[in-house]
Image (cartoon, rainbow, N blue to C red):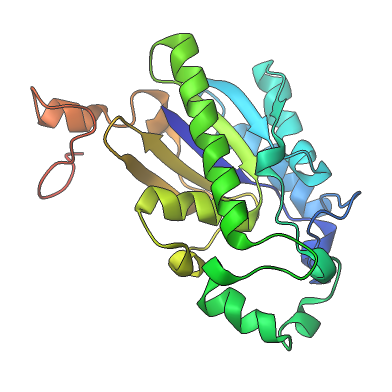
Amino acid sequence: MTVILLRHGRSTANTALTLAGRTPGIELDQTGHAQAAALRGRLDGLPVEAVVRSPLMRCRQTVEPLAAALGIDPVVDERLVEVDYGSWTGRPLKELTGEKMWSVVQQHPSSAEFPGGESLAVMAARSVDAIRHHDRRLAEASGRDVLWVACSHGDVIKAILADAYGMHLDQFQRIVVDPASVSVVRYTPHRPFVLRVNDTGGDLTGLRGDPAGHVAAATPGHAESDAVPGGNVP
């Protein structure tokens, strides 16, 4: 099962340099709408069979062009919603850098809990649970590999990628996830394979077939979740 982790396009909060969090009504800006339209083209021809998204408006606006082109009705999953930043919500980032909690978020995010909000550890647990849940659901329904899209937010996607890498949450700030970027994870019985991270313009046509097919072909008799010593074969 292969998931395309899609961060929403650039929002009005991104350009205002404020922490949007779960503030209602935060929309894509003009660039964000252009990014959403471009994503439809980037994923054109890929056999995407499901779209799951955060309930926030900026994610809905990002996936609308793609979902319409695919004829798919997106599933809304609250577990993919943005972090509840509590009293930090809506504040300018330049103010937040002076908060004592800022260094905790940077250096030890696993212990960071936003005042009046949620902890990053809780966010990571719910978001990974959501991805694994939909991966199982789609696998059970189809009985084969399915390519699907999950549209969410920067910290949420970073937490999912950290889990796929087997990284401690304290290392997740090393991962970069830009607006409208695509990251790709293939889940197998033994381990996830991280195929793309923060891809903002690369060729995605390789996802049309089995993204790990070359691994199986290079190692006959081995499971699809086996890694190839020395690296994969192109």
